[in-house]
Length: 415
Image 1 (cartoon, rainbow, N blue to C red):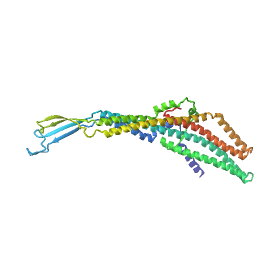
Image 2 (image 1 turned 90 degrees about the vertical axis):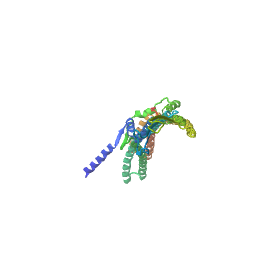
Image 3 (image 1 turned 180 degrees about the vertical axis):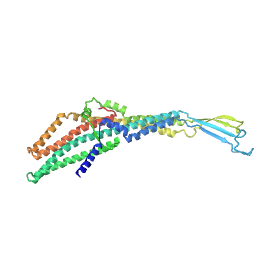
Image 4 (image 1 turned 120 degrees about the vertical axis):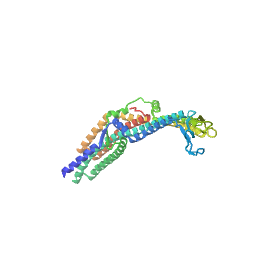
């Protein structure tokens, strides 16, 4: 029975190992670009726009018509279409005037560029989600390591105090205080774990992955976000205006609307229909070959309504671009300010400070086990230590995530 139980536990352990995947950010993004279903689906929008551009370049097919005799009353003959019968053929081709074809093609090409920019903006948004989840999982894992270390130590103390309390060597209130500290640590751990579960679900969806992701992050990966780069808001604005696909889309919308106005105006110009025909006996003389030209008379419809509508849409797109510029400037200032403050706080966190915390923690734990300090002093320190450990980790997390937010705002990797 023990061997069977051991085999089952080993099987589950192996499955747990297989279900996890350790991966760097670079490899993570590579898998994301390859497997993300949202991106793959959105890319078809570009293909659709390209197909419409191809269609806009194609001329309408010529039309063919024929007139065949069904009954000849002179000869009492059906379908008399031979040498002495009657038949007529004609072919016509519409010729677009006023630049309709050119304007339609240019509008389709501009819409194709808009589709590409929409795809790039989706990529920008999903990339931020990916990196946010990736680093959040990493820093949560560091908080979990710290919590689990403390929980293990407190669990040992609770077990020891429980025995001593039953023997009457230690007051029950001291055991209760230790148990309260233990429960607080467990609750903190559960909150971190729940956050990690949510981020894992998001990251798996982005990557098309079934197992959990274990981020592989080095100190260099974190420290690069706190470099004292000589950024200024003006230069960041220039970068954003040149790189943000959602902002560039506003400019392309204006261009598309300008082409639409040209197209609507050209639609008011009549098209010409050219044709040629053959008539065996129905015309003034036998076997007549003729030519034809047709043009609609622009008496009632000059497309005024659509021209006016397209002008209003153009003015609307110009106003939207102005608003987008103001929003982008505000967004840049906000993102830069958050990153600057986070980097400043992170740079004030000296490596020795972290080592000092660990040294004091080990010293306090050892002295409490030797009964050199009181339970009240010990629990107060543990609560303070846990809070400080989390806050130090949060400083690192904030500088990384605020740096990624700034990258996303500019749509360029600044770090």
